[in-house]
Length: 429
Ligand SMILES: NC(=O)c1ccc[n+]([C@@H]2O[C@H](COP(=O)([O-])OP(=O)(O)OC[C@H]3O[C@@H](n4cnc5c(N)ncnc54)[C@H](OP(=O)(O)O)[C@@H]3O)[C@@H](O)[C@H]2O)c1
Image (cartoon, rainbow, N blue to C red; front, side):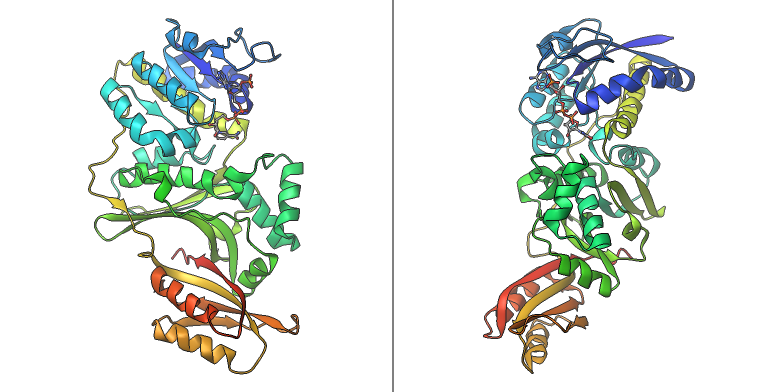
């Protein structure tokens, strides 16, 4: 049986999980795929740190791992986009397949990385970069390859889903739920990548690459996180039959545009995605032939991420054994582009804070009417402060630009008390 040498660059949370799981999983890879893996070199920032499970002496210089002749596959688990890009380039230059869990690298540097991999004819494997233990990229690359994709929806950040679940179940406000997430190790001390939606947008960009054949320019993806969400919006959503989730949406619009965005979004409570709680992830795909397909599972953590890395290692090792080129990543044919901001059409939830007086509802409804935006439900809860009351509208599909115009007009009225809260609504039909 062919034994393939693996070089690890980075051995932190994910890398040490991979090392811990390697020998047990290797037995299965031998039985099932007829390949065997051996960790032959590893680089870390601080080689003097004790690392119980690591079977090789780590070095501080990752270049020596890549140039090591016993290493045939490079696994990059550093994180970040600067040094990891250098690692990727060095792996391509050495003609060694690259396996990475680094969504930021792919989403932000993919337009540089992918052509380099193509020129070098070196495969990149990145199942672990999206939704950890859920083999969703494999499904897009293989199981659903003959489908035109009608849309992808994802709850793909476990930290945000944990926070939103706490807010929904316990009525906690955002700050309390975030504190709990940090205490339990579900949120990093620097919470910005998760809470501000950037991590989910990295994954959405990768889903777009595999689903629609192009990598959207990362800076142009509309991204909204959950930091400004208020407990009252979570509660109003529930009263309207919805739950709030940080949702990534990737879907075609017409023949040549794709909408990619991440935002806190109301989804129907009765939809299977509505029951994804805590740190779990879910991705729902709709193929023109397959119909709806949904995956649920652990989106992060050392074991779930190892599952994806080990599957990639098995695939890369098989290609090396068979001397086949492995999957070639395409940056697309240039025919599809990101939908322009404002062109998006969807349903919205809008909460105004207004003076408590007769005629307010009619005035606002009139403004929506002028912009030809239908109203599907209104909530006018009682028992709030004397000076202002929330007034919540659930709207029929409208162009985002028309919605913004209507909201701006309402906000100019003397009855308006504070900026409106606008949230997306997806019925996931
Ligand atoms: N954590 C998750 O659950 C998860 C899930 C999916 C994907 N990912 C992705 O997996 C990647 C790794 O995440 P992580 O959570 O494992 O990160 P981490 O715990 O911070 O580990 C980073 C590792 O890289 C090493 N390192 C940093 N700079 C280095 C350098 N210049 N040369 C050599 N080694 C260096 C560190 O060395 P020291 O140990 O000496 O500090 C550490 O071992 C990231 O791209 C992340 O987005 C993470």
